Length: 157
Image 1 (cartoon, helix red, strand yellow):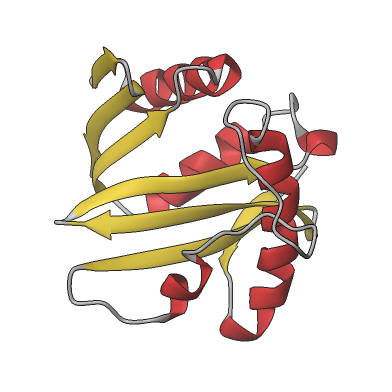
Image 2 (cartoon, one colour; image 1 turned 30 degrees about the horizontal axis):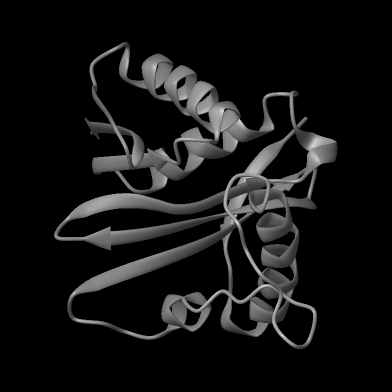
């Protein structure tokens, strides 16, 4: 199984937008999200991934397995810190190491300081990120747990 990431080109934005609907549907299990009048979930930051901003930059990646679309990763860079904004692996590819391989590929592509946050109710994400970050950093990370969720902070060269 060949897991790769590739930058999402502007002309592929409609594909990412449709995949965001799957992600937000899954995410609605952990946070109450409402459909708009068109029967879709709103994601107000999508255009920001192709709009220059002096305060931050953003990176959008498709995750592929054997060249087939399998998910996406959205990363913000704020004050020099990489932040996973969204990370999604389609259900058919979960549990096979695709998420971990894709996360490692993103971390390799964007070395430096990282922050990964999970919501309090999203226990599967907490378990996933604790495992991936611990393996990748060999346990050299800080974790904060509070009412807003769980956050791992670390640096990768």
